[in-house]
Length: 262
Image (cartoon, rainbow, N blue to C red):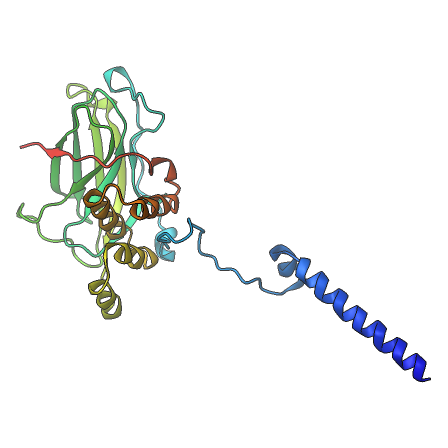
């Protein structure tokens, strides 16, 4: 009888060890089948250590305005494999906490000489227009809305549409290349504002990104990169942020200054 108890205990211990080994070999999908939640989140992965942009649920469900066609012909043909691209989430919806935000676009090398940026209020009325000289430019450009143009600041809670157009032929605008999107002015909590006041540019980018404030995350990081073009950590952050919205292919492109037309 004593021998039988020893054998039974040995078999139970062996079974426990086997169970542990089996559990250790299960992957996340197998846990899901078993009804055991894996230790993961639904946050899209980005490069290690970089800012992780988390788009708010209501923005993910947002349907973008009709996107005009982008015909390419004649002297406006791009010699780059990348076309005109707004640096925005896939559905072209971004949030800002700024009175006068900055917008960024990738501009391929073309023979076009000018572009225009138009901002419209929630009713569709044009409230701002900026003509931009782009002769011989290629790379990421920023278009900022200046505070000194008798334009009231964006209102919290309102969504504004914008168009950025590369003018291929000023006499025939049917060949224009156009990007269109929406920006929504939002308010941030006192807690987030306090964190931003104590943060450096890299930390601010992370705070904005993790709270779904795309425009300010991008413009803060772009300004830091322009001020420190040889900073490898900022370059890695830039790549991580763009990669989060499937724009990693643009991350290596230079940020180039533009000149508004008088």
